[in-house]
Image (cartoon, rainbow, N blue to C red; front, top):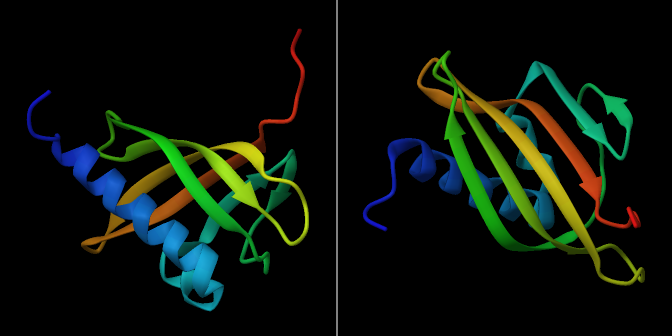
Length: 117
């Protein structure tokens, strides 16, 4: 594996920034969303910013460019919320460059708690 592609560099930088803000200072997350950004969290649809305190550990990242110059980023990891046990999660981001700033237009999150056996 050689150097990372530009979309892997942008995606990885965004993911690192996103989780740093999410875990440490959610008041600053407004800078990565726009008014029409959508979040799906465990099947619930949100538009806007929610206050949830969680600590994340990222175990895998994948990034792909889209035909319309956006970037799809997929994250797999673990999270710890309050006194709950550690849980696995998957999260997908659609990133778009608007006025030379990468923002998240779509964000889908699922806990990895389901038994598909």
